Image 1 (cartoon, rainbow, N blue to C red):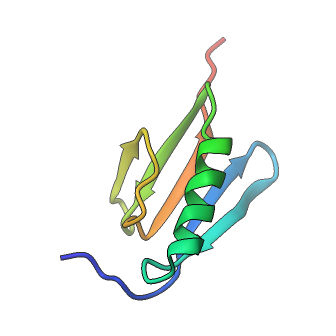
Image 2 (spheres, helix red, strand yellow):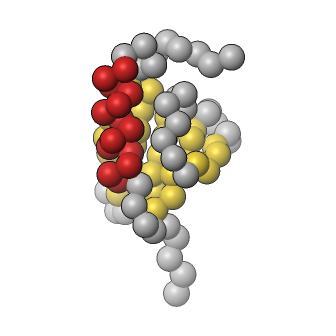
Length: 81
C-alpha cells in the first residue's frame, strides 16, 4: 500500500556541488505531480541515471518518473577513464 501523505522530493546530484532539490510534490495535489514529472523529464537526459530512494540502503534504478517514490535522485553517469 502506498503512503499518500507527505511531500516527496526530486533531487539532482551536481558533481562537486552536492545535490539540489528540483521539485516537491504531494500525491493529493495533481498540479504538483504534473510539475514534478515535467521537471524530471527535463533533467533525466542522456548520460544520467535516476533512482527511487525508499530509505537507507533501499534504492531502485528507474527510467521514468514514479510519483509514488518518496524521493527520486538523478545522478550523472559514472565515467571511466
